[in-house]
Amino acid sequence: MKGLAIPLLLLATTAAGQTVVPAALADTQLANPAQEASAKALMETLRCVVCQGQSIADSDATMAGDMRALVRQRIRAGETPEAIKDWLIGRYGNYITYDPPLDAMTWPLWAAPVILLALGVWIARSSFRRRR
Image 1: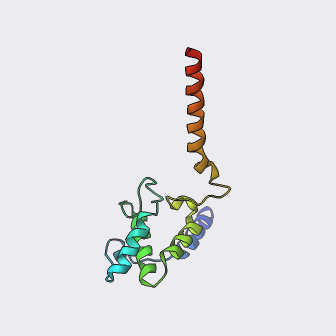
Image 2: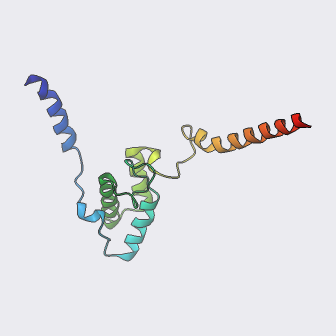
């Protein structure tokens, strides 16, 4: 019994720290069309942390539904999409967005296509020169 006390205590404290978001907002549109359009536009730019290949607008995962509800709740409360996006990036990291900012951690992601293209051109050029 003593061995279960610590894991149960940890589970209880992490569950108590979670915010409760009404699940009804996951798939229910906001009454204000401008707010709903703003929420939809933001949801299209956020990656589902479960699916990782879909936006939260397209994903059927429970986590994506919770995130849609959170976005709608915050939009309805008057927060700007940028403030919500910044909050989500702070919570989940730059991976949550499809357009990560250029910084020390993401520069290889941005530079890789250019480097690979240059490498391919160099290999093709040297291959053609050998054939002559």
